[in-house]
Amino acid sequence: MRLVSLLPSATEIVYALGLSDQLVGVTFECDEPAAARSEKTVVVGGRDTRGMSPREIDDYVKGATAAGRDLYTLHAGALAGLDPDLILTQDLCRVCALPSGHVEDALGHLGCRADVLSLDPYTLDEVLGTILTVGDRAGVPGRAGVLVAGLRGRLDAVARAVAGRPRPRVAVVEWVDPPFTAGHWVPDLVAAAGGEPVAARPAAKSVETTWAEFTAARPDVVIVAPCGFHLDGAARQAAAVAARFAAAVPGAQVWAADADGIVVRPGPRLVDGVEAFAAILHPGAVPEPPPGAVTRLR
Image (cartoon, rainbow, N blue to C red):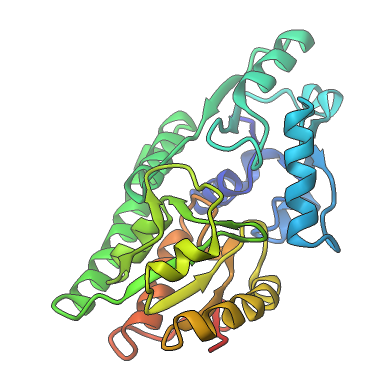
């Protein structure tokens, strides 16, 4: 089976299932594993936002959305040349990937007959379910079952380690200018790590809010995990967030997290995120996260 992934999390799932040899197309954002983008055909492009501030990126996205412009470009000729059997995409977030309807329209225009599978989880449990779905559709349900069982085992280990401990109030900032709440599965990561998510929207889309809402929630811990950024970018943005909380909630810890690595992409590494969050909230109860996962600002 020839697979094409139109979102980074799906690429990670494919590799985790041991199907890298069947993956023929990816997007320009598929950077994990690093070989994905260099070894596979890139079939989706988009604007390079490196060097843009969070406000500039937000303005660009809102402007394009208001004008009805797509944020991503499907390289239709390249896609057709790959002759895929299964294409993995999503309808969860227009900012994150091409919607499945756009892909299906392109396939119809090209005369391609590939199946399109839309992965749209809203909770951590549903993320694990998408791994099973991909494994089933790709013909490796047994591998998927083993992978998910291992991930659930790690989650159970965290739950046992933090059981009975006080649950700190945790606010996760998914964007800093303007501020956005944590949505979808991110509050689940906090809860699984032994925290109480505040200023959050569990199983719902992240929305723009105000810093007053964040500070009014009186978090014990603030984790800055801006979508689209790894730890270095998150840490730069977290410095400004720390200054905002210094006066309003002086006792709050402020951390930065590798958002793309362990927080916002709905794939297997979300369990790494739970383990990293648990290390922040309950030091000593679980192993320290690896370098590059999180860093404390205040």
